[in-house]
Image (tube, rainbow, N blue to C red; front, side, top):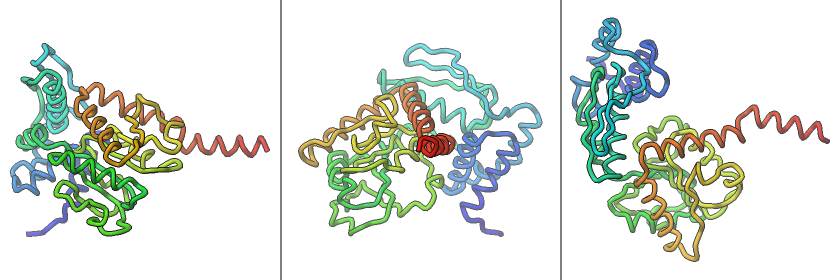
Length: 303
């Protein structure tokens, strides 16, 4: 029996989903879901479902790139029609809405109808039950606010902090040898990470010019909680990110970051969407390749 690496299997699923007609976002959601089903031992709901999905498409029972419709919105009761859309995307979107509503009201009963096959059902329970998870990306050194990160992780032991970046010194020396801080190595390609599993991006740097990582993360559709440093406010306003000012001590700044994380946790789905859309638009307006080329041309013309 041939053995495929996860990356190869993900590429295969993505190819089929794109040929079916899914856009890039839907393709990634479907591929991530099916691959996780295989990797968690539920092969019946993994890549082997692809032939069935093709048959559903041919029979008109699967329609790519659908937008879910709200049939009933009565406070803690939601009924959503998926329009025969890809079940993995439709169900995940519906569950995220239900999570937001439950945060708002304390409970939510969700009904999803007319979805195509939704895949491994446990995925959605995990989505609802998982602890809050944050991502931090930078060179791992004192000047990037590792002391603040360590204090933040210490005061939120139930949250998980995944950190990416080269290590300037050992993690224990930075206070980051904590059970809820996980170093996942350096990132050669930021697009390789599935940021949909995170509640937000945390940036604690003590000083910066214009940090490229914040510009890049603005394109990955998760809320950003960033230190109010450098030229970030020249690009982003308070609708696009939650800014945290450095206080007199690491512990005080960590308290401010903790309050910002709580704000993100309390977001409704609509509030989260508004923030990530604003971040993407504002960064694109200031830093898209065409904008840069035009500004360079204007500088040369002026001189």
